[in-house]
Length: 79
Image: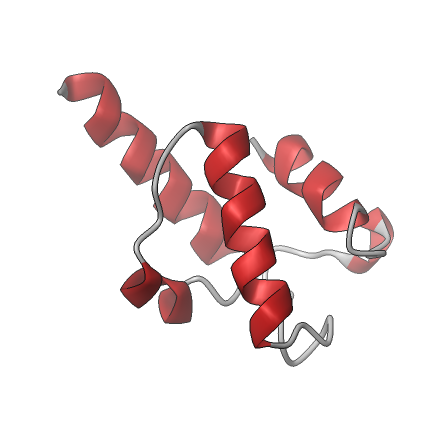
């Protein structure tokens, strides 16, 4: 999962070596609100799920994003 996310981040010009578990998308990588929306859309396509707009503010770091995606995929598989 992490590699798939890193591949998406590379599309935004982010180097893999710059990404740690606690890298903050806005503070450390300089993402603005449009970048965040674009990132969420790409993640939705990649992982085949929908991320509600109200969840965007929770997904600020790589570790939080991975945890969220793992939980959402578990819920989808259980349904």
